[in-house]
Amino acid sequence: MTVNDERKLRIEDEAGKRYMLDPSACINIFNLYKVYKRDKIEVVALRGLTLHVKRGEILMVVGPSGCGKTTLLNLIGGLDKPTAGKIFIDNEDITDLNYDALTVYRRKKIGFVFQFMNLVRSLNAYENVELPLISLGAPAVERKRRVDELLDVVGLRERRLHYPTELSGGEQQRIAIATALANSPSIILADEPTGELDSTNAHEVMSVFKALISKYPDITVIIVTHDLSLKRYADRLVRMRDGFIDEALQLQYAKEEGTTLVGEDAGRQQSAGRAGDLEDVLPQYPSISDIKYCPKCNDPRIQVSILKAVNVDKPHPLFQIRDAVIICNECHNVEKVKVKIFHQ
Ligand SMILES: Nc1ncnc2c1ncn2[C@@H]1O[C@H](COP(=O)(O)OP(=O)(O)OP(=O)(O)O)[C@@H](O)[C@H]1O
Ligand SMILES: [Mg+2]
Image (cartoon, rainbow, N blue to C red; front, top):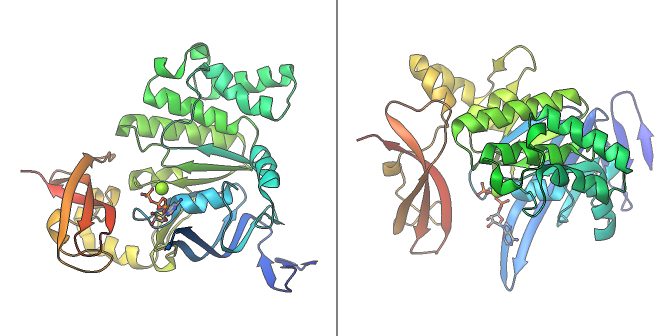
């Protein structure tokens, strides 16, 4: 049953449970749970996540490794089904769709951009962008018009006959973005789209991405990233923690009036004082010496290994950001975190 009032859309499910949808939101998510089970082990990846994303909004999602960001994108994109909770896309409940219906939903409504460019290696740039249109059964003339248009916008029309291995990482990702937009999706889901790129390429890809999105203002975009310097491309940023949106840490961005910080981050920003300039572009990661206990069981018997350097827009004069893995000798939890390493 559906009831409209002035600002909310009331939808009742089969069990009589009511959901108040924001009709201006393309994505309305209520109390979402995802529990992965293998043998006797259960991992609760999402625990009661509620989120509304407006039509045409560019939302950036940040949060520590393992907090459920990819899981959330997979559920919105219909790649997987939630354990409990509801996802309404354009006011339609997708949580009850079977896997065949989800495939149709994905083809029509969703464009994915992944960290590792999701291009087919045996197809050239043109054919990669054309592929989703072939799956949708679009006529040849329409396919050519659309592919040419997208290759123009990402600035790679002259490279259309090149295969992925003949393109740089940034160029491949620009083709991947064109591919994600080919089927005119209403939602783009990008999971660490610049995770494999250096800072210059990351910003170039994001500029192209933003230019492309602004040509189609109704597209709703969710970008998961660890790189806070990309926040300038977003309308709003939310943080996830332990499987839900951490409301206390939300930063609200006014679309045209620059950045407005609210909540805890505003206090942190003010207290940072003049150092704010550089601190602002770098996430507030712990230094390596701050990691003394297992994040899961709090036991001090841990091993911390430093991995690769993380790209940031402005390098900090005092430290760099690195990926590190914490291995707990007590509970065997393995966790990837980002840390500051002070220069020698
Ligand atoms: N298929 C799966 N089976 C079992 N557990 C899973 C599966 N996929 C994810 N998980 C677990 O669910 C939790 C959330 O994983 P998810 O990949 O969503 O995190 P994330 O926030 O995207 O992390 P990262 O920033 O490292 O990509 C993690 O504890 C992960 O180990
Ligand atoms: Mg992930």
